[in-house]
Length: 182
Ligand SMILES: [Zn+2]
Image (tube, rainbow, N blue to C red; front, side, top):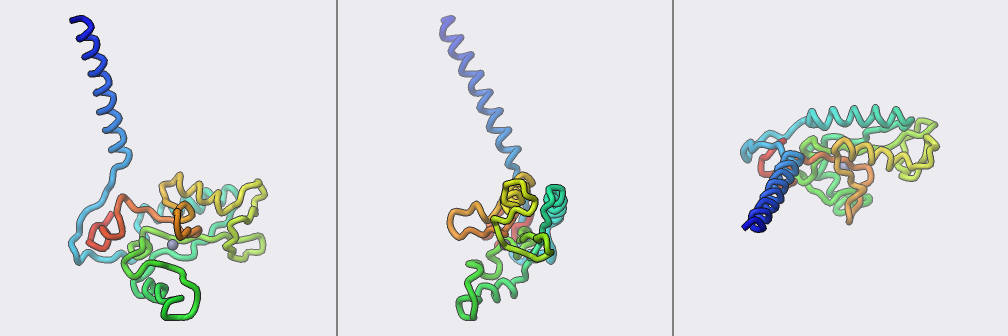
């Protein structure tokens, strides 16, 4: 009888621990969005939190002597479609696999970055080490961005998008198209 009680007590502790862990996990991953209907307005600028984190990223990069350039922020549906046609029905290289409404850029939740070198030129050289600390500046920026909560396109398994940073708020592009907004 004593043994059984001890076993039950141990199980109780284990269950309490698991419940606490589950609760902690869910509050950490809290997703914050609401449904605005299928005619939900399309944002005209970066989401305020994304804008704020972008500022922080620029400042933190600057404190490491990295000059960050934001090359693209919100992208209209028209521009998204024009980019999609590039390399398909129009001249040029394919630059995106997303049509209008299929990119986080279209909802103000993504932006693209590049670097400025010592001459002030905008560069897309991911190996450039302008602050001479033995680490590529491009990846330093990506690391800071990830600490700020961004997803980085350079981490994607297929179709890597090194300049791309986005914040999803737990929303898929399908959900954004349906009218969910952060
Ligand atoms: Zn992008």
